[in-house]
Amino acid sequence: MNHLTGTIFDIKRFAVHDGPGIRTTVFFKGCPLNCWWCHNPESQNIDPEPIKRPNSEETEIVGKVVDTKYIMKEIRKDIIFYEESNGGVTFSGGEPLLQSEFLIALIDSCSKEDIHTAIDTTGYGSQKLLKSLLGKLNLYLYDLKFIDDKLHQKYTGVSNESILKNLEYLNSENESVIIRIPIIPGITDTRSNIADLGGYISQLSSITEVNILPYNHLGEGKYPRLNRHYRLGNKVRTPSDKELNKIKYEFESHGTKVSIGG
Image (cartoon, rainbow, N blue to C red):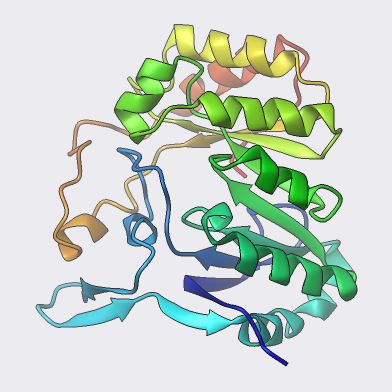
């Protein structure tokens, strides 16, 4: 039997912020977006690449090509924890939609074994691809950053036109969707952007929840190790609890269930 291959850069076991219950998160390599605040810059290039070890000039390769058999073997190690916690598997990245055949093969394999599946996605892809996922995935963790397309292009490098259309399509098909919004002070947390996002989301009936994700500096140190420039520099701070609660209240005022963090 032939097993499809794909490129990943990590598998995280016992994850509790990537969907319900205890989960195994499979991180796909490759992303069409280039967000200024990306905390996994090693996820952007789809190919395995060198990265310097911390505090060293020595390098290692981040990313590896694996097949579905390998991934399923890792997933099965934690089935008992999924059953006890109503957990499962989350496909993250990068952007899993970029490796669609590999993704679908893994979703189908999990489905055959009654394993709950979720995808953490930017939503950037074809509607034809999303149509092929209907009824397969149990949950979408859908990243939303801006409603204003010019701002989206400036800070992510791509238009959000297909992202919003795909979200509206999933809503029309009554798919289970949790919106995730990164809170980047001075960029995504502006009064106008939060108001635009809140009004937009309130019109989507299948959205079960909004997660607001506070910016942190954890990915900053990876950029020089990849010989890349970190465009936010040290100008952005982590938002305060007061600021996060104010944003939470704004979304709740639209009747939306909101949590801080995943």
